[in-house]
Length: 205
Image (cartoon, rainbow, N blue to C red):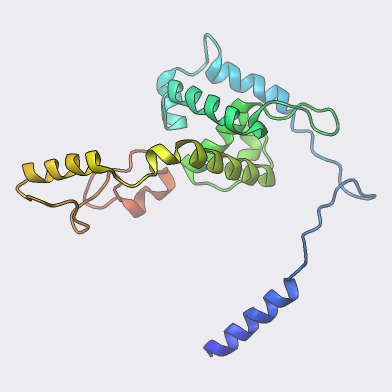
């Protein structure tokens, strides 16, 4: 049974090789683009969170963005400086594109809640294909910017700090124990909490 499945997959891949998905573009009979009023929703977003007297305070911002406002501003500044895609601009039709605040809000909401891309269309006015592109560019930017600092292997100073913590517990010379070591996942998406929460009162990995 296994060789049959492998042959079937190989034939499918061979048939798809060299084929590219064609986009509709401006073709006769194509449905007109949806006017999502992105500028209006940018103004609403700014009034809700980013103006001098926002509708929602810092507590609501931290709850829905899973971070403080200061951290959001820092990430947005770094991402916009790294990738010009997140800057405000105009498309081929002269329509203003989504603002940096909208794009980062889209990426963070998508990852924080673990929902589907279509869900953001009604609230943020992002189509599902645009959501995928924004999230992909955002993740790549985050890895390029913060990877050398936060995704690096531990150095000598980090190992000394880890070993000192284990020595306080009586485990001299221990650098880690897979069986008992758990990390608190503070920003775990609500949809995933049931899978990552056991007898503890918070999600862990």
